[in-house]
Image (tube, rainbow, N blue to C red; front, side, top):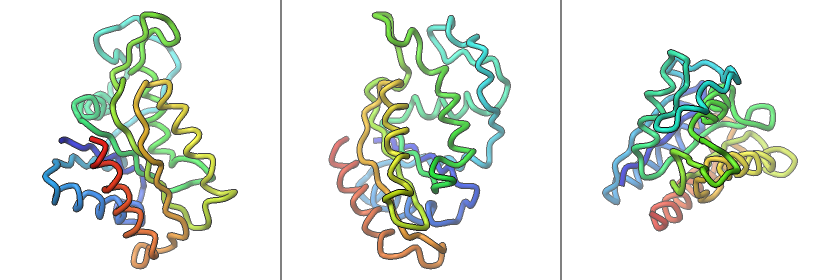
Length: 190
């Protein structure tokens, strides 16, 4: 299986990258192919809300000339998508939020019989790292993610939240546990 991992952290060697890397190693050991995208390395603009993508049915149809379509092509071609982000202000990083907002063009005719999504039925998972406990901190981000996945028609596995990650040199006991749990559940599901 081809698994795409989307690292939404501006620190490409931070806690989120470490845990995601451990998951990727476990997936590779089981014969899966990994396609890692470090979002910060791409030029991605925010959604314009222009709706010019909506009449275009057979492709995303976004009019912007940035790198987003390259990422979407890779996401559409993947068997599984892992979204990985540190928690910033109780939400996704700006980099990940930009990608999620732009997924608007991947859905056509929402809430009608002609509904179409380029991510329909695709297994997706969310990895979140945060510096404190989950409760009253990272407990809402899975709700937001699930709502986005309901819109895109993708199938959510997880979420996976690693609390108390304070420094990349020592992400805490949650790092290995989270990566192992992700591998066990995600790889068993595909």
